[in-house]
Amino acid sequence: MHESLPVLLQKVEARGLTPETLVGLIADLKGAFDEAALLALKDTVLQFEERRDVVEHEGRQHRFKLVSEKEWLTPFGLARVPRRYFQADAGGKGVVPLDVRSGMVDRYLTPDIEELCAFTAAHLVPNEVARFLAKVLPQAPSTKAIKRVIEEAGSFAEEAGEEIEAALRKEAPLSREGDVLVQSWDGVNTPLREAGVKTGRKPQRPGVRDGDQAPTVWREAGVAAVSIYGRDKKGKAVRLDTRYLARMPEPGMATLLAQQERVVQPLLKGRKLREVVLLCDGKLTIWDAAKRLSSYPRATCILDFFHATEQLSKAAEALFGEKSIPGKRWYEKYRLRLRDEDRGAQAAIRSLEYHATKLRRGSARHKTVRRVIRYFRRNQSKMAYADFRARGLPIGSGPVEAACKTVVAARLKRSGMRWSRIGGQYVLNLRVHVLSNRWEVFWKAYRQHRAA
Image (cartoon, rainbow, N blue to C red; front, side):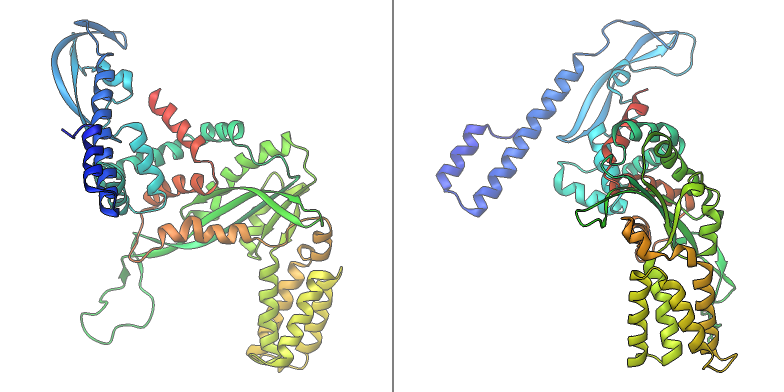
């Protein structure tokens, strides 16, 4: 038993206030409060114990058999709760009414500890979660218990997509202040715990990398950003709110785009939007997928400006040489024309065509410039950046580019990590709600699901 509050205070008064006594006082107070809270929790819960010896549960009669103690891990420490167990008259599974009433059927962690585990696991691996919680709780859950929370909450998110989306639309809709809807998506390579073909030079010494199979294969996970933009006083596009979505590697990002449709369709039907934008890099697969979206017929398609200037940079190097002064001048001139002039893309194409004639046909430099010309011609309609900016539209896919790093890479690509597709998906299902600032709504839906 911890000492009483007056005794604790008297000890500090006798020794004087120092950094050491302050730390000790805080620890003693916390211990005393935790101990009192555990007693209060246990006493309060037991007031709702079933006193009858015969009860009905799910249409069947059950009779009291014995008192069974169960451990609950709470914010105040480990509570040992004696509960009355009832056995079915006709045989089969018994029932503990107190567990049913408190939502603790087959549970060890109380709901708030479960949430701490899930929220923290969106940022850290389970053993790090356990170490962190050991610093803030009287007793931390085990790594095994934390993994179970990830699996249960992550699988709920996987199975209850429509239910969660309805809750988000109602309680945490995308900002109503802006009038431009922007959709972006991209991919990021992710390590999978699957066998793959080894690449690279064959080993020269026996026993080194023998065999043709590698224990890890890298595949592209998909990330999407659905954003609402407004305009500042100068008419510049300003991002006001973003929802992130993420899927482990899958063919054609099919599930990711279906989830994106669930987010976007109600906005298209229920809001007055000035513009709808599809803003991505230049991958052909991305724009082929865009044509299947319900928003495509009315959307303004924009090629990310950074990717366009990256192509310009490759052309400048091929035309004028690496780090050459003429190359830098040419690049900067056409970067600005591309951004600021109504026919900037056409001007860049003309200049590229002119300078390409000075290169030897079939050379590596000539091929590079021709690839850039084809890239610009193919995406010319998506590169009217001066017009887009005048309309208050964004021209950079920064949110989804950053999301590839923050949503997926920062959590799933740490040293030595390899993932099963479903295990990685469970983590992403938690992480997207944290980074979209919509965790509370998601967890409320999960808690209601658990209580049902």
